[in-house]
Image (cartoon, rainbow, N blue to C red; front, side):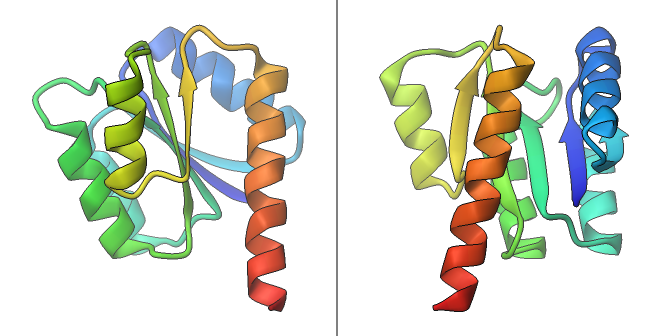
Amino acid sequence: MKVLVVEDSKKLLTSLSAELREFGYEVDVVVDAAEAISCASERSYDVILLDLMLPRESSLLVLHELRELDREAEILILSTADQIHDRVTALIQGADDYLVKPFSFDDLHTRIQVLMKRRAKNASG
Protein backbone atom coordinates (compact mmCIF):
# COMPACT_ATOMS: atom_id res chain seq x y z
CA MET A 1 0.00 0.00 0.00
CA LYS A 2 1.34 3.42 -1.01
CA VAL A 3 1.00 6.27 1.48
CA LEU A 4 1.87 9.94 1.08
CA VAL A 5 2.43 11.80 4.35
CA VAL A 6 2.14 15.60 4.13
CA GLU A 7 3.29 17.03 7.47
CA ASP A 8 5.37 20.09 8.32
CA SER A 9 6.47 18.80 11.76
CA LYS A 10 9.68 16.93 11.03
CA LYS A 11 9.45 15.07 14.35
CA LEU A 12 5.95 13.78 13.60
CA LEU A 13 6.88 13.11 9.98
CA THR A 14 9.81 10.94 11.08
CA SER A 15 7.80 8.93 13.60
CA LEU A 16 4.83 8.49 11.26
CA SER A 17 6.95 7.28 8.38
CA ALA A 18 8.85 4.84 10.61
CA GLU A 19 5.64 3.41 12.09
CA LEU A 20 3.94 3.11 8.71
CA ARG A 21 6.97 1.36 7.22
CA GLU A 22 6.96 -1.13 10.13
CA PHE A 23 3.46 -2.12 9.02
CA GLY A 24 4.75 -2.68 5.50
CA TYR A 25 3.46 0.48 3.87
CA GLU A 26 5.44 2.14 1.09
CA VAL A 27 5.76 5.72 2.33
CA ASP A 28 6.63 9.01 0.66
CA VAL A 29 6.99 12.04 2.91
CA VAL A 30 6.77 15.75 2.12
CA VAL A 31 6.73 18.88 4.26
CA ASP A 32 4.76 21.36 2.18
CA ALA A 33 1.94 21.81 -0.30
CA ALA A 34 4.08 22.19 -3.40
CA GLU A 35 5.85 18.88 -2.73
CA ALA A 36 2.52 17.18 -2.03
CA ILE A 37 1.04 18.35 -5.33
CA SER A 38 4.21 17.33 -7.17
CA CYS A 39 4.22 13.82 -5.68
CA ALA A 40 0.51 13.29 -6.30
CA SER A 41 0.86 14.41 -9.91
CA GLU A 42 3.66 11.90 -10.51
CA ARG A 43 2.31 8.93 -8.59
CA SER A 44 -0.98 7.53 -7.32
CA TYR A 45 -1.45 6.74 -3.64
CA ASP A 46 -3.80 4.52 -1.71
CA VAL A 47 -3.83 6.89 1.26
CA ILE A 48 -2.77 10.50 1.72
CA LEU A 49 -2.26 11.75 5.28
CA LEU A 50 -2.63 15.54 5.11
CA ASP A 51 -1.77 17.98 7.87
CA LEU A 52 -4.50 20.59 7.87
CA MET A 53 -2.20 23.34 9.17
CA LEU A 54 0.47 23.62 6.50
CA PRO A 55 2.45 26.87 6.40
CA ARG A 56 2.14 29.29 3.48
CA GLU A 57 -0.73 27.45 1.84
CA SER A 58 -4.42 26.85 2.43
CA SER A 59 -4.64 23.18 3.31
CA LEU A 60 -8.23 23.07 2.09
CA LEU A 61 -6.98 24.27 -1.29
CA VAL A 62 -4.29 21.57 -1.16
CA LEU A 63 -6.99 19.03 -0.26
CA HIS A 64 -9.00 20.09 -3.30
CA GLU A 65 -5.96 19.88 -5.59
CA LEU A 66 -4.97 16.46 -4.24
CA ARG A 67 -8.52 15.19 -4.73
CA GLU A 68 -8.46 16.44 -8.32
CA LEU A 69 -5.11 14.77 -9.01
CA ASP A 70 -5.97 11.43 -7.41
CA ARG A 71 -9.67 10.76 -7.06
CA GLU A 72 -9.04 7.20 -5.86
CA ALA A 73 -6.80 8.06 -2.92
CA GLU A 74 -8.27 7.99 0.56
CA ILE A 75 -7.42 11.32 2.20
CA LEU A 76 -7.14 11.39 5.97
CA ILE A 77 -6.72 14.80 7.59
CA LEU A 78 -4.38 15.15 10.58
CA SER A 79 -4.97 18.31 12.57
CA THR A 80 -4.77 20.02 15.93
CA ALA A 81 -8.00 21.84 15.01
CA ASP A 82 -10.62 19.91 16.92
CA GLN A 83 -13.74 21.99 16.44
CA ILE A 84 -16.75 20.38 14.76
CA HIS A 85 -16.69 23.12 12.11
CA ASP A 86 -13.10 22.19 11.14
CA ARG A 87 -13.99 18.53 10.73
CA VAL A 88 -17.21 19.18 8.83
CA THR A 89 -15.50 21.62 6.47
CA ALA A 90 -12.68 19.19 5.68
CA LEU A 91 -15.10 16.33 5.05
CA ILE A 92 -17.30 18.48 2.82
CA GLN A 93 -14.20 19.62 0.89
CA GLY A 94 -13.28 16.01 0.04
CA ALA A 95 -11.50 14.40 2.98
CA ASP A 96 -12.44 10.81 3.77
CA ASP A 97 -11.62 10.98 7.48
CA TYR A 98 -10.30 13.38 10.09
CA LEU A 99 -8.02 12.61 13.03
CA VAL A 100 -7.22 15.12 15.77
CA LYS A 101 -3.63 15.47 17.00
CA PRO A 102 -2.27 14.13 19.22
CA PHE A 103 -3.40 10.64 18.28
CA SER A 104 -2.21 7.14 18.90
CA PHE A 105 -0.59 5.27 16.06
CA ASP A 106 -3.04 2.40 16.70
CA ASP A 107 -5.92 4.80 16.00
CA LEU A 108 -4.27 6.02 12.80
CA HIS A 109 -3.49 2.50 11.61
CA THR A 110 -7.06 1.36 12.32
CA ARG A 111 -8.50 4.30 10.40
CA ILE A 112 -6.27 3.51 7.43
CA GLN A 113 -7.44 -0.11 7.50
CA VAL A 114 -11.10 0.97 7.65
CA LEU A 115 -10.62 3.35 4.73
CA MET A 116 -9.03 0.58 2.68
CA LYS A 117 -11.82 -1.87 3.53
CA ARG A 118 -14.41 0.70 2.51
CA ARG A 119 -12.52 1.31 -0.71
CA ALA A 120 -12.35 -2.43 -1.49
CA LYS A 121 -16.06 -2.84 -0.74
CA ASN A 122 -16.98 0.09 -3.01
CA ALA A 123 -14.77 -1.29 -5.80
CA SER A 124 -16.40 -4.72 -5.64
CA GLY A 125 -19.86 -3.27 -5.95
